[in-house]
Length: 315
Ligand SMILES: *[C@@H]1O[C@H](CO)[C@@H](O)[C@H](O)[C@H]1NC(C)=O
Image 1 (spheres, rainbow, N blue to C red):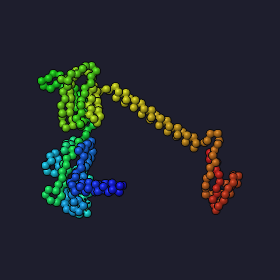
Image 2: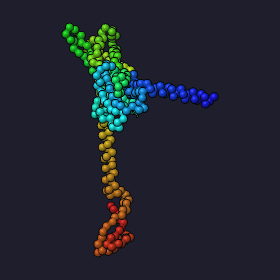
Image 3: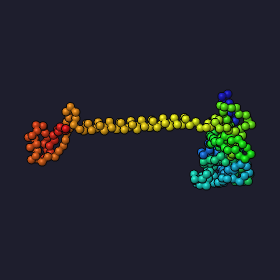
C-alpha cells in the first residue's frame, strides 16, 4: 500500500516537473520599489522547453514604457559559450545584467536611479527561431521621502492683492500637504495646490503679516513639517547652549593640561620632603677618576673593565 502511494506520488511529480520544464516560464516582480539615487534590480528569470540541450543564441532585451518599444538594453551570447558576459555586463554602464542569461537569469541592474526612471519595464528573451521568445512586464517605483524644500511668502502677482505663503515639497508616492494654523481656520478654497514636477509640488495659502502657519507633508514613507515664521528662539537657545558647552570644554582641557604639567614639574624638581628616589645610573668612568670617586663615597659598586655601576641619589 505504502509503496503504491509513493509510486503514484513519484509519477505525479515527474509529470508536473516534466510539464513545467517543457513550457515557457518567466518570473518578474510586479513592482520594484527603490529610493531615488540608489541602484535598482529588476529581477527576471526564465525557463524554456528543451533547455537541457539548448546551445544556441540567447538574446536579452529590456524595453521601457511600451511593450513594443525599441530596447534600451540588448545583449546576446551563445549558450554553449564559456566566455565572460562582456557586452551583457559592465559596471561602468548605467545598466547591466546582474546574473547569467545561460542560467536563465535576465535581471537588470540600473544604477543611481532618478525619478524619470520610474514606470513600466519589459523583460524579453529571444532564442534561435522566429517565435521563440517570452516577455513580461515589471514596474519600477522610485520612492522619495517627503521633505519641505522651501516655505516663504511670495508677493502678490498681477491681478491679485494678497500675499501668499508658499510651501514647496517633494515626495513619492505623491504626498499630501496640510496647513496648520493656531489663529484661524482655513477653508479649502483658500488653499491652492499644484504639481511642479514628477516628485515636486507646492501649496499656498493667503498670508497676513504676523500669522503663524505650519506646512506639513506626508506619504507612506513618513512626514515632515516646517513653521512660518521659523522658530528662531529655539535655534538661538540651542546655539548659545552649544557655545557655553564648548567654552566649558576648552576651559576643562586647559585646566587638565596645566595640572599635568605642574605635576611633571614637581616630580622632576627637587622632591618635597627629601624622599628622593634611588635610580640606577650607568656611567663609563676612567680608572683614575674611578678610585677617587670611590674613595669619596661608601656606596657599593660593581666593577668591569673601566665601567662602574653605582646607585646615585638624584636631587
Ligand atoms: C544552457 O545550457 C545548459 C546546459 O547545457 C542548460 O542547463 C541551460 O538551461 C541552458 N540555458 C538556456 C537559457 O537554455
